[in-house]
Image (tube, rainbow, N blue to C red; front, side, top):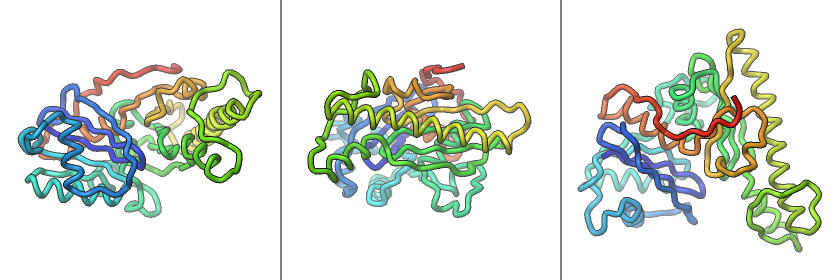
Amino acid sequence: MVLALDVGNSRLTAAWADATGSGEPTVRSQETQTRDISADQLDTLLREMLDLGADPLERRVGAMVVASVVPAWSAAIRELAARHGLACLEASAETVPIPVRVDRATEAGADRLVNAFAAGRFYGTPAIVVDFGTATTLDVVAADGAYIGGAIAAGLEPGLDALAARTARLPRIELAAPDRVIGTDTVSAMRSGAVIGHIGLANELIRRTRAELAAQSPAGARIQVIATGGLSNEPWVEEIEGIDVIAPTLTIRGLLLLWQTMGDGGTEPAEDASPVAKVRA
């Protein structure tokens, strides 16, 4: 089978499908508390996620396709693949089959390129992908399918962590949407500022990005706005204006699509079979 790994700054998402990367994948996600990992530690973690017991990884996995934003994890994955004789396709500006029209293509995040690739194939172009994770990112796909850049903002949860770490009296709180803007105690006031403030941030970034993208797209082109990432299933995301689709597993499914397109599978990309929540038509 093909094992897809999306390695973010605070979360590892894995998905596996048949040898071509097609079919309905199994998806599992796990928080990661460290940016350092050895190949041995990764081996143990993946065997646990795949329920392999004492079986070696190569007994079930034939290839890996990876998007990683954490260098130590990237190195561990390469070492693990070599150790077990697994093909390993890493997402980058060289391997994701879309034009990359930014100033320094090699600096474009692997996950952002995969998001752009997947958005174009699954939902059409032009498109904007809003990824709610450790960072909140916007990835912009031109009408011809090219990745043309975007925006990066601090994510909602790191913002709350920073408040607690850099102030004397503000506590660490559990993330939850407030019932109203005016908080009547410290916790509700923090939730209001964090969640409603983040909705405002997303609204403005989407509004301005949509206007800039429309100006360089064919007349009448419909811009698709797709929300993804670890927080995209939170109820407050539905309050963000202009989101058409919520696809929490866009990146990991994009990796499987990348394997179908560029890996040894060599098959034509399949249609996306993932459940998608329509937020606004």
